[in-house]
Length: 455
Image 1 (cartoon, rainbow, N blue to C red):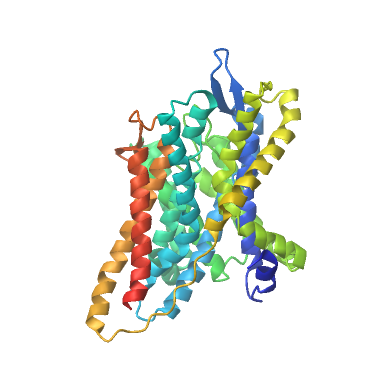
Image 2: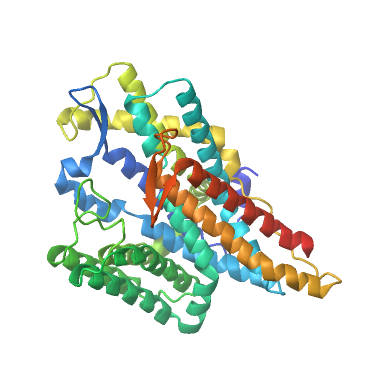
């Protein structure tokens, strides 16, 4: 269906504002990456990719608006709650819900991701066999996979939705508060008591707390968003002013402490203020979204948003590659000439991204919804299949999670030189990360479809 047809078929009870937040958050990340990239050539001719915010530290305050990934994870919590509850009603036997839920939520995420990985992986192999490399190309092979960290975190949120949703339904705000308290405790242990490695727990506690807010939103329990925004903004400001936290809400090269990797309690406060702020303006924006042209634009953007996110760094580096090939001078970042050239670079990156989206957008189309299973004649056989399908689906999601995270860290550079990155306590290479992702995706697909066919 076209965007016009999809927009016209929108159910009256659909929350259009959530769709806008999904598009706007990914779009803001893309724009932020294009803005922050500072590509230069050194005296030795080597290409370096720096960060504008490191060159101009005063601009780091912009990350309090541009670091908008918490909004995307908040929207994810809202959507996951509705999806899981809908499948629970359609799968009355219960055991098939989890694998069907994983497959339904991960298809639109993983299909374009696997295409992206496949294209860049094949390109890396061919370039190595042809003996082509050096310069910006080596940088691109390392950098293009970095945004996959977001895919990995989102996979974890999908996988943990059922147990956390149960906790939410039982404890409400208490479940959210427990995650916030756990994130605060981790930072106390990290900064006050110098406990080693404890900080990595906040990859779970910080992002899952934001995700939990989506559950509260789904139940209509975020009734005073201005309080959430005020508390989050005040908390983040105080922690940055008087604590060990940097101003930037994204990682900076060479910094001793990052708010992002691993996430800190300051980043959690930042997420609270962002969620509160977007909820505060929901009603007037929701009225604006009732306009047919506006809504068609949001629908069209939603259909390509993940593809655009995956390929936007490739497009940006492609633009710089063309500039270098044409011997165009790359100004020193943050100078007048650099700012004058910025709109042209962003415009060119947008055009190239559109070309890549046109080529790969078909892989983002959602698959057909799973049909409601009928009870087989052999109930005991059905129950046995349920016993194994849930753990198998969880294993598949776990393999995807660690595979995608590993690839985001190691990239495709040094593919045949044994280059690895440390993932938790294990050194992971790009081939191993790709194999884990493929195996996990295949398992989720197989189990998700198997529960329906066996039923």
